[in-house]
Image (tube, rainbow, N blue to C red; front, side, top):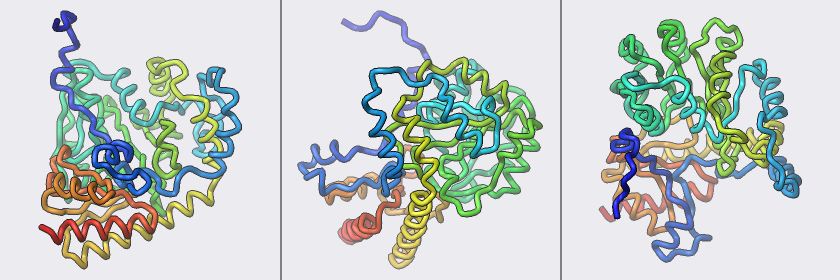
Length: 367
């Protein structure tokens, strides 16, 4: 029998998010030993979580029969001190992805518009269409955001503009001057969501927190995550900073206990491990330099990256990715981002990067 229940019509054309394939799945499908498979597909921190975070999380495991702090009080207090914003300007989510969806719950309705850039994070169209809103995609400039053009794309129906900086999947970075122009010129009825998932990889990161603290730009929301440089992707934890009224709206529409106890404790400890962050940044710089040098040597086009991954042109991204998997190396084809000739490769450990490049050279030499 077919389902007689009428589903939400928005689901009919709703895009599906395609995550990087897990090691276990690839190993099972190809008959490989999981221990000999490396994953460089999901922009995870190859250095792993902070040792301080691991220790703190282990100590809390005996308390898992209890519910977590539904308001994440201590984590918000710690983030408040670190970021210099009052706790009523902070909220946390089950990954920054949940926060993006909560923005949709709080703001979007049918016939509203959302402005994004071409080659932007796949979750933005999903959030837009989930609530029946209309997606306005502005052509990219050098694989990155054309912020002046995005400002011009705003209409009276525009409710949200999503800007990832650095951008996923291309790794590009919008200049501080252009972002400031955006903040000052976007009309007050449009919420600018700055997705800063990769900002911690920058040595001299542009700081837009003063515009949140001042309260003079209530239409600015900054989103960050513990999934990338903090190495806690498996726990799903993100946070957003914005105007108190916007934060209050997000708090209203979030689920109770949306961030678990282990995630909160792990994040608290990770925030204190400065040495682990510096070690990760150093590894990332060396990895990006290695990939760029190799791509130049093999005359492969690539997009200079400001994140922990790099985009490289290989001909047929899906095919090359499949061949790399047979060699135990998982990368990310980006044909779903309208980049069928490209691969996105996450920076791994030194050994993983060398293995990936050797495998890529082998695959490309065959074709």
